[in-house]
Image (tube, rainbow, N blue to C red; front, top):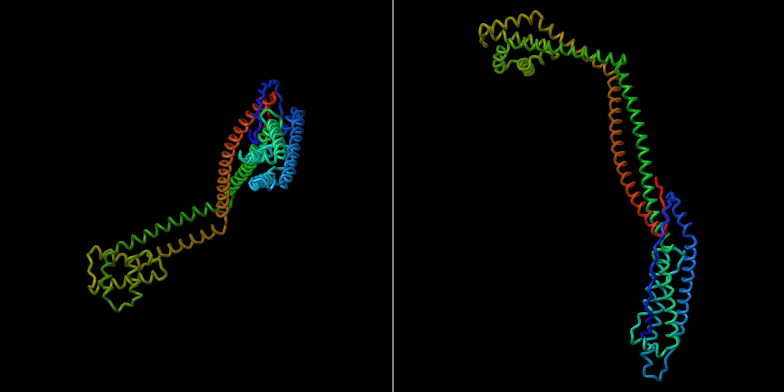
Length: 436
């Protein structure tokens, strides 16, 4: 038998089946831990008290080992024996190793499942470390330090037995791990419930925002209707129609001018050849003539358009007389008729009407700008559009939150069923947990 060999583990008793009380007990998630504690309070108190007692005994036994270790540290084997050096070295190594292991025994601050599990795990490692002595060293220690070695073996056996009992208190079906498991599950469910409530609050806020923004949008739409029925807006519409009519009239005059000039297009183009070769004509005047030939409407409507037109008609007529420009009879006839209309002021009258229409259009447009009704209309339209975008965004977020709620609710219901089943199997009571 080895120096630190212990007895085999006794067979554990088979757990008795839990008798289930089928009468349901409704309880809210926040009250569940309290109700569970009420059902297991007596057993929980006894088991915690026993765990506390075991902890105290184990700590006391380790203090005893420390005391004996110090005594063993001071012992020395007789120098006359040939094993003197080897035995003392083995003993000193064991003592130093034991002192190092003793520092690994944790202190329990509160007698709960987590701290007891931690104590059991770390203390079992310390115990295993103290038992791991090579056979040869164990034989020498038990032979030359028999009293001390024998006492240490007894203490370690007591520690092992007490740790086994403590492990039993933390096994499935016992009140300490049961309360811990329920507390852990309840914390998870409370976290899920908080998440669900947060989503509900977000949903409530978004619904309020959607409703508020919807009402604001309706008010703005009413404001827009009122604006478009207002006298100022009617005046604006009338002004717009007036401007449209004036522009149409002006376009008719533009077409008339274009038509007039089309009748003398060929004589003008033929005169252009004379114009290019006549160096006596100043450059600025030549440019004005070319503009009248190629862009007659724009040229006639310019500031000096009328005088340029009369001048070029005179010069074309002069070129014809000097036979510098030759025309067909039909072309000549059209040119003479056009010249006559220019001299009679008919082209000038059309030009003046065109200029007057331009001024009236500009004046009407300035009046529209001053009224501000269009700016107000566009402002309200932008606000309505912005509100519409906000409402759409709120609705998308509400849809996302609704899906999130359904997902969390499903998780809560599944976790709730698992917890109810666990409680029923552990303590024989059928709890119905209320969450929503």
